[in-house]
Length: 264
Image (tube, rainbow, N blue to C red; front, side, top):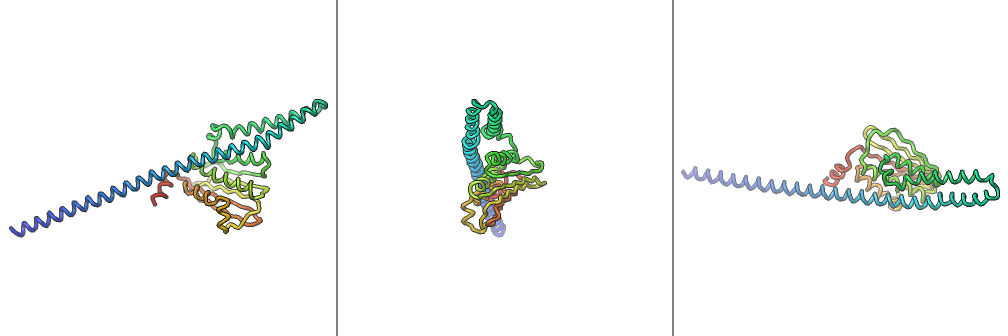
């Protein structure tokens, strides 16, 4: 009888320990789950904030571009047309030059309207948006720029396009302002599993192993943006031989990439 009671007591203790252990493990699991969910929400919030900030930067850059083009390009064309009109008053044969200048001004205004109209911008693919930038550089005679691209093999997520476009925009701005380059060549290649974009200028270049230079041209900022969508951003440069950027973006939902990076 005593042995039976002892056995029951031991079984009861074991059962209680097992129940406590199960509860303890459940609480740990629940805590871990809640922690992961919190990290996911924080990652999503961080990503959405980065997207919003990038969109604002693109709009600000676009407005600056519009201002420069109105002043330096269209404004000068209209000033020239005014001078030509005054000359044509005494020499009617010069009216043809006036017509040509005004026609060019209208063409430039139509091109500029694409940048002003947000609906047009939203409807553009990444390649079309980059092409607009290239056309603007040539139109403003900032630099002799070219772009080559194959047919798009994958529809990119809108948010990924925003990030990629801003990274390239930063590189283009550095090229125009600091590189003293005369040419800029951009290649957009859609592969079966990834997008590869390369941009190369023939500017003064710099020692790409100098970390202070990376900070000055915003490379860390470009790479951090790339990490948001799991894109790899490489910058190579050599003094006297120009600077090149390579962006590799594997086709994948950017939201899941961000969450994976944050949770790991």
